[in-house]
Length: 87
Image 1: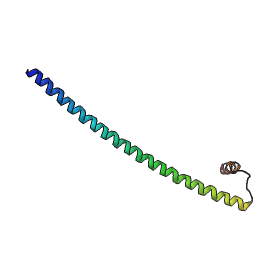
Image 2: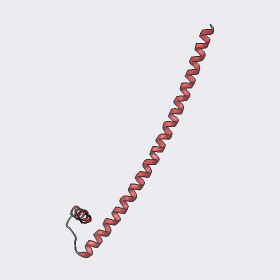
Image 3: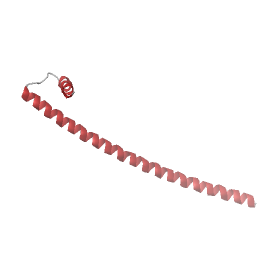
Image 4: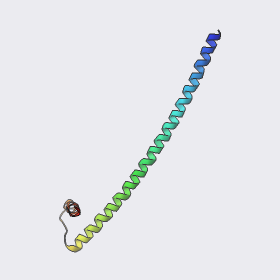
């Protein structure tokens, strides 16, 4: 009888420990997911700022080229000439 009680107590104790570990794992996983989302938001915000800066630079170059009379027929040709000019 004593052996049965000890085994039952050990099983219940291990069950409680497993439940607590699962809860803490879920909490840790949620914290990690939140941290990853925060990092992703920062990266996307930085990328967005970079895109806006590139758009500003390209608009400025296009305006300069309009003043100089170097306008191309399509935006793709203009972008290509802008890239070639920077090399």
